[in-house]
Length: 495
Image (tube, rainbow, N blue to C red):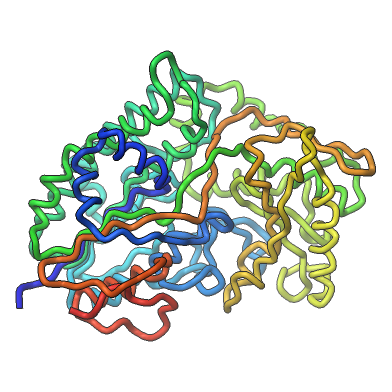
């Protein structure tokens, strides 16, 4: 039997509705041809809740309650501080570690929040060109420097979440298109490496495009947001026939996204004000004035700020972001305090015995979450719509041995409201959103998978694919039985 190989190509955060429109309009002919001849599987994930947990869930084949990662900056209760999610407390084994131990050669590029698999048969690169805040690293250690020497510096870098003018958006799309072209050439090279059994390449360019181009509008005269998304994807479309030819018929190829995007603007500042109400404090206390560093940063043009920010040591970046996310909070005194999250508002109960300086008995924790929920749900937008759809109790949704590393509650925004500038409750209290619009797209839990099996490989019928299913499927397609402990199921048989 000929050697079986697997190529996983991720269009990170690519909204399936946008992809369908671009295909229908004939703007991505090569991807259209591939998709029309491939098996299409809908994908579900936790992108609508703990969206930073998606790639750890993919890489570990376990849910957030088991791997414990949900964003790049997380609260470490035993030390009462924010740390990067790469801290050893949140370590886990990516599924390709086991493949390498079984003799399979693996190449992985820019899968965020996945620990390095330090094995002789693995080449893993993280932070070459990434939208997410990850520290650049690789295995072997010289793999990333060699990649940069061969292909150059990637134009996609850490997102500093700045407001974008129409002209900025045009420049952003141009840079992202260049990044896609570079990554597509690398993908073609890796696809043609017959010694490599599994190749995973993630296009983070589509992630950033989704955050800033989610609103349907004419960005400049004659160019809509979808036009710019098409420009970002076109280099991959042009390279796609070469990628497939390099991979060969003996390679199963999957083009997928674990989650999508929809138009909505950040809600977290509204949640901070609701928390003040739950704690019996003045609403003004939740709108503290920015400190000196923040005021200086807001005066600095984004290219300058980005240049400085990226060159700070990762630990300094984490400490600064932790200071911003925790401003006004007192975890050793407050029964509930905010923790880092993106878009929706995340809160944590200061539980005695879990937090090093906790103040709430565990049996009383849910009462504080209920208090936060009751403060939030009455708020209505000027149109009379609820601002929050509810409070998600994370431990109930994501049980597991590391659930205590996740937020306790997530105030979920009403997805029908694209932006809320102010809201009131029946008591006449008013919360406001003073933040200037920066991103206009938030994650959803819907994704897609178009998979072309290798010659002679059938696919098992599958309805909906979970983010956890890719790991056992990779084992199956490479002729191995998935190890115990995976929560997902294979949607392809053992070859």
